[in-house]
Figure 1 (tube, rainbow, N blue to C red):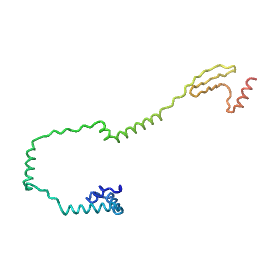
Figure 2 (cartoon, rainbow, N blue to C red):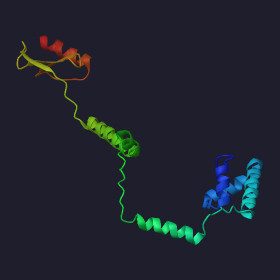
Figure 3 (cartoon, helix red, strand yellow):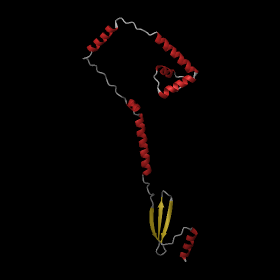
Figure 4 (cartoon, rainbow, N blue to C red):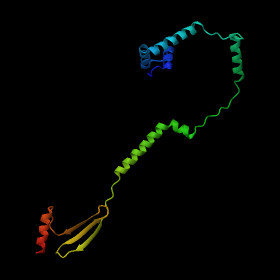
Length: 176
């Protein structure tokens, strides 16, 4: 409960609160001196009003008054009245559907994220050029990629090793 809320104290006195809300207000009133004083004051005012009901003065007897009301209702029974239906503006529509719009926007963002994630990546473009070499049964192929900023030269027909010093030894022995 929000501290010192006279509307809730009044609702408690009127019997409008039920369940957990009623229990929380009663508990707060029992522990808070300011709200307990407000509760006692409002209870006293209600007792005074109940003890001294206001009787409105009527110029006519109650039976005659209600007969006039009934006669007016019957006189207007055949009449129709045109009431304009209020039109919603775009701002009203957005305010009434803000949660639906937020959900739709979030769904579109998630869908776009999924589509961008699942889009296949383009293979980097490479220029391939084959050149005959002086070594028998070999061809040099250069792969040049502007995206990777690297050029790889592959010589087919030569033995391959991952160790660069072994590769240099193999090339040195090919020349002899």
